[in-house]
Image 1 (cartoon, rainbow, N blue to C red):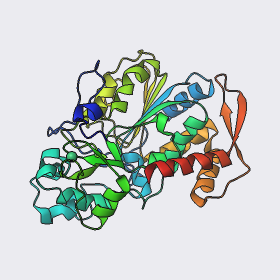
Image 2 (image 1 turned 180 degrees about the horizontal axis):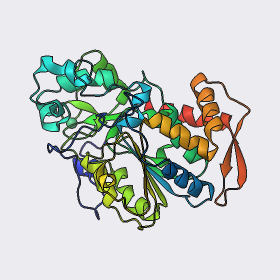
Image 3 (image 1 turned 60 degrees about the horizontal axis):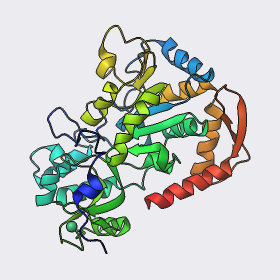
Image 4 (image 1 turned 180 degrees about the vertical axis):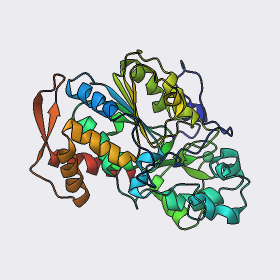
Amino acid sequence: MNRSRSSWDKKAPHPAVTRITRSSSSQVRHPTEAQDSSSGSRSATKSVSRRSLASVARLVKLGRCKNVVVVAGAGISTASGIPDFRTPGTGLYANLEKYNIPYPEAIFNIDYFSNDPQPFFSLAKALYPGSHRPNYIHYFIRMLHHKGLLLRMYTQNIDGLEKLCGIPDDKLVEAHGSFSTASCHLCYTPYPAEEAKHAIMNDNIPICTFCAATVKPDVVFFGEDLPQKYFLHAEDFPKADLLIIMGTSLQVSTFFFFLKQVMRSTVPRLLLNRHAVGPFEKVPLRRGDHMELGDLEDTVRRFAEMLGWNDEIKELMRSQETGVSSPLSIRKTNEKGEKQTSVSLKMASVDLTGCMRLIW
Ligand SMILES: [Zn+2]
């Protein structure tokens, strides 16, 4: 039994890439914070240009976008009822006052956890995946994959809804980790995720069998290295021919970094969000940049309608959420936009089952 596995073995980033951890600076917000979420008033912000969405839809239909990279944040999950963190009274942070943590983000600070894991475990009971379902936005991204267009999805969410909707593991980078695995916070010895969950849900503290330190789910805390898969961006971004950014404030440094990646200046970047963020706040926008502001689920639904995917997505959702397979086929589209292959939804259901096994 290899008990000498160091943190370097497991957590070290790609050697050719500068080490990047989750920053705990005051500029950084928690990844699941829903500042730019799609919840709230649906009349808040109108699109700056209806033509933007149509322009990108036209490119996709013309077969110009065959390697789509999606970067997503908390806003894609609010339609699934994932509570935001900061809403006074109802946000998850508001229920942590009894622990007297010095500031809300301390609950995701690895040094704070090392001294007192109880606040995080209390929050983890509410955050463990299982009580929420993927929404239309998740299935839209899943449809990108089934059309053969998804190069990779990078999510900052830890709710596991991407896997639950059937986006395969090799297409998904959970940049801030997930609850699907667990390990010692000190020596990184793996620990059975289900046992860790059982302990946490019963107000017990899972203990490392090697060094007796506290075990935690492999959610990336401030001060911890990012998962190795995060560094796939170094090869993904130069290949990308469309970048879709959705439901994120881009204030998490790990994601803002993406926008500095090498991309040809002509590669379109589409922001779907409640507010303009990052480089999309500049006027005029960079050539090739498009944004559609407003309720995210509404926007994605309109985008799907422009692409002619709406019925397929709704059928996929109905099939998977009810567990009933459908004779409807999902047609894969080749590079020229010609319908090429049919994949039955039974296969899609197999995907989902596999993913559920991966998670729980
Ligand atoms: Zn340990």
